[in-house]
Amino acid sequence: MKFLVCISNVPDTTTKIAFTPDNKEFNKAGVQFVINPWDEYALTRAIELKEAAGSGTVTVLNVGEADTEPNIRKALAIGADDAIRVNAAPQDAYFVAEQIAAIAKEGAYDVILMGKESIDYNGFQVHGMVGEMLGIPTVAPAMKLDMSGNTATLEREIEGGKEIVTVNTPFVASCQQPMCEPRIPNMRGIMTARTKPLKVVPAIGEPARTTVAEFALPPKKQGVKLIDAENAGELIKLLRNEAKVI
Amino acid sequence: MSVLVVVECADGEVKKSSLEVASYGAQVAAQLGTTATAIAVGHANEANLAKLGEQGITKVLFDAEPRLKDFVNNAYTKLIATAAEQEQAKIIVLANSNIGAAVGSRLSVRLKASLATNVVELPKIAGDQFTVKRGAFSGKAFSDVVLSGDRKIIAVKKNSTEAKHDAGKTAEVVSFAAQLSDADFADAPTQVIMQDQAGGVLLPEAALVVSGGRGMKGPENWGLIEDLAKALGAGTACSKPVSDVDWRPHHEHVGQTGITISPNLYIACGISGAIQHLAGVNSSKVIVVINKDPEAPFFKAADYGIVGDVFDILPKLTAAVKALN
Image (spheres, rainbow over the protein chains, first blue to last red):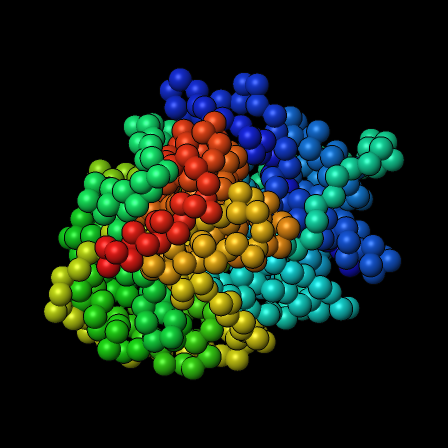
C-alpha cells in the first residue's frame, strides 16, 4: 500500500498572530513553525497502517519553499519513508490541491491522507478538491481509518453523529482526532531522517482563484465586567437585559 | 442568473445554520438584483421547505430520491452541480458545516468556481470585484478574500449571520430530479450513528453553550453543567484536556484542534483559557468566564466574569435562569 501524506507548515499553536504593516501578509518574524496538528493525525495513522501491514511506503508531500524542510525532516523522523516538496509558496487551496493531485497521479498512490484543515487558513477545502481532480472518493473529516486489503472503513464526523463509510482504494481522507495518538520523533528517527530521500519538484497549474486583499485582527474586547460570586444570579439578569443574549 | 442556496435538512426540519444561509443567499441575490433558489439535501419535509420563503427564498428544488436522506458526497455534489447548471447560478451559498465543506470543495473543481469557507459577512461587490470576509488563523484573525472565478461558492460560518424572518411568506417547492445512478451512491454510508446531545441541542448549531474544563474535577460533576445548559436551552462543550482524559466525548471538544464555534453566548466553567482553547471560541458574541483563579488568562477575553468556585456558582446560575423563566 502506498500512502501519500500531505503536510502543511503552520505557525505554532501558541503564536500571537500579527501581520506586515500593510496587512497583506502574516508576519513570520520570530514565529516557530510546526507540522499542522491535524496533519500529524494523518501522518501517524499512515505509519501505523504501514507497520500493521508489514509492507508499503509512506511518502510525505509539502507544497512550500525551502524553509519548510525542517518540518519535512521531522515527518521523516516520525517514520515516513521519503518526501516530496513542491517548490512554491502556497497561493490558495486550489493551487495546493492541483500540486497534490499531480503528484498523486504520477506516483499512483493508494491512500492520500491529510489533516482536516490547516490551523492558519482554515480552508477545509484541499481534500475535496484533490478527490474531485482525481475522480476518487473523499471522506472528510475522518475520525477513524482501518484497512483490510484494498478496502478502507472510516468513521466520518457529521453534525450530531458519525457515518461509517467503506471505500476502495484509491481514496482521499482528511483526518482529525481521535484517529490516533500523534507520534513524536525519537533520536534514532532523527538520525535516519537525515539520509531519507527528499525530492524537490517545480509547481504546475493555473493561477490562484482566490487572493487575500487584507488581513485584520478582531476588535479588542472592552474588558471584563466582574460580578460578585455571592450574587452570581445577577449575571443572568445582565445577560438578558444588558447583553441581550438569553 | 440566480443565487443557489444549499439547504441541509435533518428529521424533516431545515437546520438552523441553513436558515442563516438561506437568509444570507437571499440578501446576496438582492444585492445582485436577482432571486435566490434553494436546493434541499437530507431528510426534508416539503411544508418546512416552503417556509424558506420567510428567509427570502423564492423557489426550492427537492429531489425525492430516498437515498439522499443520509449524506453521500458524490451524490450530493452531483445533485447540487446539476441544480446550479439548471438555474445558471453564478453564486452558490452553503453552510460551513462538515457537509458543506465536503461538498463545496468538490463542487468548486467541478464548476470551476472560486471557493471561500468560514465566511462571516455579506460580500462587498464593487463592479467585477467580489470580496468576502472570512475567519482565519483559528479565529485569531480575519481576511478579506477576493474571489476571481466567474462562479463563486461561499460557505457561511454558523451563527455569524442572522436568519431574517418575514412571517407568512412561502417559497414554491419544485420537484427536481438529478438523474442519480447507483454509481453516485458508491460512497454511501453503511451505518449512521447519531450521538446523544445534552438537552437535545446540537453543539455546532447552538446559539448558547455551557462548557467545562479541568476545574470541574471529574465527569461525575457534569450534571452541574448540564443543569444550566438545560435551563438555558444551550449545548454543552468541554476543553481539550477534558476530552483527552475521556471525561467527555470528543465531539464536545471546542478549541483549535476541536470544533470551532461562534455562539451568541459561551459560558466557560473552570477553564483557564489557553490560547488553543480561545482559538475555538473567541468569535462568540459574549463570553462569560467562571474560575476561582482571578489570574486565569480567560478573563482577559471575557465580557463577564465571576471569580469563585464553579460548584457554588453553577447552581445559583441555574436557579436564576429558572426564576427568569
